[in-house]
Image (cartoon, rainbow, N blue to C red):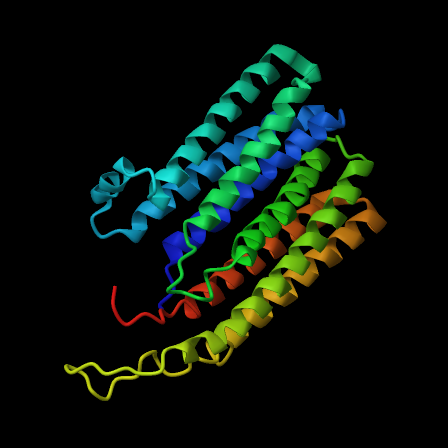
Length: 290
C-alpha cells in the first residue's frame, strides 16, 4: 500500500497534541510548570487543529467526509467525537488557567479528566485502523505504538516549554525517561508484531481471478513485510526512538531541556513518522473480495 502522508501526519500530530496535553496535566497535578501551562495548552491546541486539517487532504472530495459522520460505528465519527471532547476539555482547562492568574492552577479532577480524555483520543484513533483484512494493522500493539509516541512527545515538549519559561524541575527528567523508554519498547514491539503477520498470508490456500489469472493474491514481497524500503523505515523508527531515549538521559545529565527537550521531540517525530510508513507498507489485504 502506498504511503498516505495526510493520514500519517494526522495520527502523528494528534498523538503529539494528546501527549502534550496529558503531560501538562501531569505537571499541573505535581504543581510544576505554572508559567508553562498556557503556552503548552496553545501548542497542543494548534497541533490538534493542524492534525485535524491534515486528514482532509487524504480525500479527493474532502466534503464527502461529512457523509460518514452519520454512522456511529464509523471510525471517522468516533475520531471526531473524541477530538471534540478533548477540545471541550481544553477550553475548560483554558478557563481555569485564566482564572488562576499567575499561579495557573487547575482542579485535580480536571487534570485527571484531561489525561484520560487524551488517552481515549489516541486509543479511538488507533482503533479506527484495526480491521481483520489487514493483519499488520489488526493489533492492539498498533494502538499502543500511538500511545507510546504520545508518551514520548508529551514530556519532551513540556520540558522544552518549561525550560523556555524558566520553569524547569526534577519532573522534566523523570517524565522524559519514562516516556521515551515506553516509546522505544512499544515501537520495537509493534515492529515485531508486524513482522510476525507475514505468516497470516498463508491462510488463503486458493486464489483465481478470471480477469487476471496470473495475478498473485498479494503484491510481491507482502509476505515478508521488512524488505527493501520498509526495512529502511523500520530501522529509522528504532534508531530515532532510541535516540529519543538518549536525549532524555542527556537532558537529565546536563539539565539543558531547551536543547534536549527539542531533540527528544524531534526524535519521537521521526520515529513516529517512520513507524507509520512501515504501517502503510505492510498494510496489504489478505481478502480478495471487499
